[in-house]
Length: 96
Image 1 (cartoon, rainbow, N blue to C red):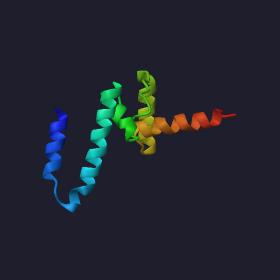
Image 2: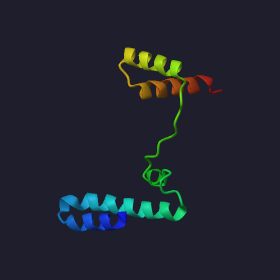
Image 3: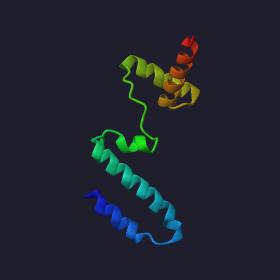
């Protein structure tokens, strides 16, 4: 069980330098237990508690993906950042 591995790692951390890791580990441990109790473990429940859950997935058709990759490369951006920027700008432009 992962709990035993977490507890074993925690016991091995003894210095003040490791206090931060122990604190994060405690928070993570409790988040996992809560997600497990709620039935959201394995579906982003832990990441949501840490504010790190992905917002969603967008599937692009191959032609749009190729166009986005080319335009992103021309601007020196990753495709993901470029598509995120395009989406944000479009949403702002359509806001009443």
